[in-house]
Amino acid sequence: MRKQRLTLLLLLFLMTACSSHTPLGNPEAPYPPQRKPEIGDILHLPTGVYVDQQALYDNAERVQVVYVGETHDNPASHRLQLDILRHMAKTNPGKVSLGMEMFTPEQQPILDRWSAGELEEKEFLKQVKWFKNWRMNFALYRDLLTFCKEEGIPVLALNANKKLQHKVGRVPFEELSEDEKALLPEMDMNDPYQRAMAEAVFSDHNMGQNMLDGFVRVQTLWDETMAQNVAAYLRSVDKDHQIVVVAGGNHVRFGYGIPRRVFRRVPASYLLVGSHELRVAEGKEAVTMNVVSPDYPMPPYHFITYTEYELLENEGVKMGILLGDDKDGLLIEGVVPDSVAEKSGIKKDDVFIKMDDIDLEEPFDLIYELNRMKVGDKIEITLKRGEETLTLPVEFTEAKPEHSSMEMKHGKK
Image (cartoon, rainbow, N blue to C red; front, side):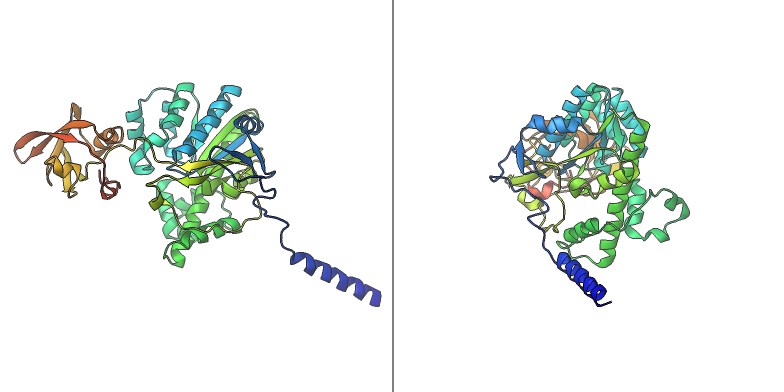
């Protein structure tokens, strides 16, 4: 009996001792690289070995799903996505698809027409309501989506219904209607790593518990919906088909977002690829967040590329106007002081009719054209002012920060 008690005490001691051990090394980078990374480097995080692009491509060839986490407004992220997709399309022609966080299943028929070459860019963006639904400058995604159109690569809409997203952000799941509950994917709300990420993001904001809970619900809805749609694709194709999934870094990094939830449904092989900005371009500092990431017990990616947080080469131009609707054109509801619009003589309550020879029937028509222009370009705006029709020359100068956001009924432009 005494021997049994001593054995039990020894086991308890060993268990307690083991539970108090700190990790041997850094779980997020178990093998520290031999030198500091530089812009352009690619690091295999599990081994701490720097590799070239071809090694990354070779690994991508061997899996069914390649997740590429992005910084939405960093052009370097999108070049990485295109490089990987282009290589996979070359080595596995006709058997690669692109899954995108930026679209929802309601838009799938439009995406199918785009990949089939049936839509020009302006009509495509108009139909998917790009500037309303995603709002990032399309120039960031143009090369990626144009490549899909040119090569006939299917583009898959992955994200959740917008109305459901907004509702889930406001109310707990149990308060949804039966019809709304029927739209939910299988949900796992108990992932501790996702919760820790949400709390870290919210630590940089002065928001309450209800807002945090709503954010966690929406984040989980996004991840589970995207995982469900990726899994449905995998079930519908042969195992030699591949999908490149592009989504924000927090949906991919550490694997707990989309990847783990896909694997729960379909245990397919996958690769996590991401990037880390070593340098922030002048002018980007204001958009970075002061977030201290939790410590996680695993590497964030299999491969990480080191980049600069770049400026978009051409971000379009701004006029400094507040747009509304009018049956005969675009109503100017406000003009920003000292803006291009004010300097050009544009006034509140003017109604835009044309930009050069382009009819302006809805805000999209103007927004699309301005996003394609650059500083120094000149146009003519035809407008109505009361009973008078005027044509005013407009020259675009460097936009000031206060002119650069799109927040209005249709946005400040």
